[in-house]
Image (cartoon, rainbow, N blue to C red; front, top):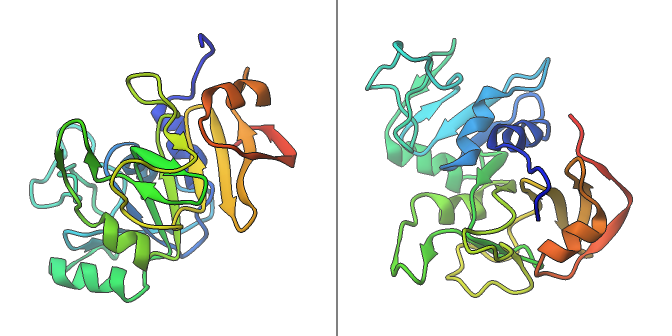
Length: 221
C-alpha cells in the first residue's frame, strides 16, 4: 500500500504523550529510545535504563558524547539535573520491585491477547532477551512501538503469536507507523489511524481481528 506512514520519530512522539508527570519510564531498543527526545510539556519524566542510570536527558548531541554515559543500547546520553548512577543489579531490582511505571518496547509480534514476542526471530535462530522479560512483568504499563508490518510485508499484529513469547497478556497499547491499538479485557481495539489512512486500510494490513472504537480518529498530538 503506497500511503504515507509515520516516521519513527513521530511514533515516539505519539507514545511520549502517554507519559504522565513523575513517571519512571524504561525505553527498549530501536524506536522506543527516541521517546526521550519528546517530553510532554509541563512533565518531568524519569528515564530508567537497565545498565544503571536514572533520570537521564535526551540523547547527546554530536560532539558532546561521553562514553561513560550510555543507555542499555549503547547510545550516548545527555546529562540531566538529578541524574544518578548505580549497579545494574539495582536497576533490575527497581524493575522487579514494581518501580517502573511504563516500559516502551519494540516487537516482532504482538497478538490480540496482548502477548509479546520480541526476543527471537526463529528464522535466524538467535535472540537476545535483555531486560524485556523482567520489564513485561515488573512495569505497570507496557507500550509497544513498531512498524505495522515486517520486512516481508506480513502483519506484526497477529491473532496468536507464533514466535517465542516474551510475556503473556502484558501489552496494553500498540503504536505503529499507521495505527494506535489499545488492548484490554475486551480485546484489541483500534483507537487511531495515520493521516490518509482509513479503518478499512488498517483491516487490510492487520492479521488479528479487532474492534473499532466508537471514538476512532486520526492520530493527533
